[in-house]
Length: 226
Image 1: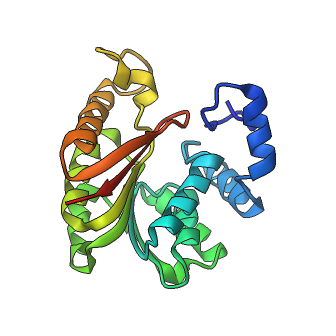
Image 2 (image 1 turned 90 degrees about the vertical axis):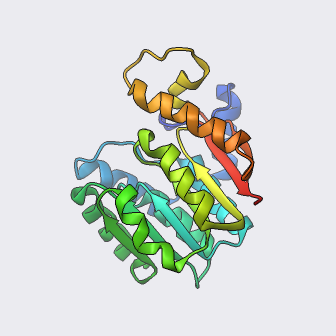
């Protein structure tokens, strides 16, 4: 676990984890305020961790992304990280199923000055994604929503990312469940099975060249090749 005690970097050495946090300082005061306000609003504390957020920003910068889709907004923490990496001309479409979370995220984007560069779509992403398809192809898609939907979201990204575009997906380790024949734990077994299918298709489906960034919860990373 990280020094903050939540969603760590995945480094097995506590000493190295603390050193990495101290040197790279992944979470500034703006992001910390978003995290704290999200929890204070009664939302579950399931936003990406500090280093996950830093990874999102830097991978977005490296990809040169200007048009991005996020599935799973929550309080806007990860959206801010993506927008920081997209430059002044970037635009983010983010999808959130819960109106209460969307309201917190709207305040986040207002406070951080990104309100004009993001659109929050409220509802089931599997139905609402069609609304943004005319604006594609997109440069980047980030998944951090219901795990049972990951295979469907991947199929959508296969068709609506540009060649060379990036797919990122949090929780891809399925809380350790993807490595087990049968998952038994506090998370959804159905979700873990969906993550197994998602990972298999991302890695072996032929549309992406993919890897896994071994954060504590697994950040799947694919580049569309055809």
